Image (cartoon, rainbow, N blue to C red; front, side, top):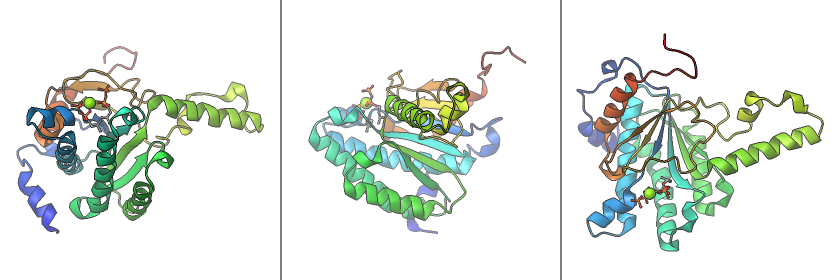
Length: 255
Ligand code: IPE
Ligand code: IPE
Ligand code: MG
């Protein structure tokens, strides 16, 4: 067991264990928001908030892995985040490289499998290489699936899917009448990944910001005013407690 694993285990809250929940969502999606405000409150550069945010992410990944969540998807950089100042974008890209570079060491023993979705070809070459390396390395793991959404946008994902389908029709491989939800889902970046059961957004904002638009059709939403760098397993536990009380009807009626 690595040093990091030993340190992070100290932060774990043994009182919040798997058995404390009547149901654990199979897929939790997170919009980790508020890094910038966290830094501003302290008179620090926004990049410091992002660095603290990446540490919060490690804690949350370990917590979710411990309690048996199968899929955790995290919005790390949106297709709209390029609008930010170049210095902030560069700092974020560097941090992402660092996060992936240290991931297997710092998530040591967690058996986490990492997958990145989004327009990865639009990312810096160094980051693309790191993504390929870490996906290959952790591909053999069968624990929590950590899906990092990078240069991701729900609209562009849907547009890409529509184009893939149009090509299939043009090539005579698919009839227009046979286009159904399954066909479209198979063309999304998330093909093979179950829909999120629970979406958590921090920092008090209550919007979707172009995240998993198709996939969240029946997802339960949970919002907290907490800024992302302050988040740890206990906040996820709070979300899970709220999730337990939700009555998911999917358009039907209560049992
Ligand atoms: C979320 O924090 C992280 C990313 C978008 C990468 P923000 O950077 O959006 O923080 P706020 O919302 O400005 O506080
Ligand atoms: C959503 O947060 C994207 C990520 C967390 C990566 P933003 O901070 O970019 O969203 P808006 O602009 O407040 O909607
Ligand atoms: Mg934000």
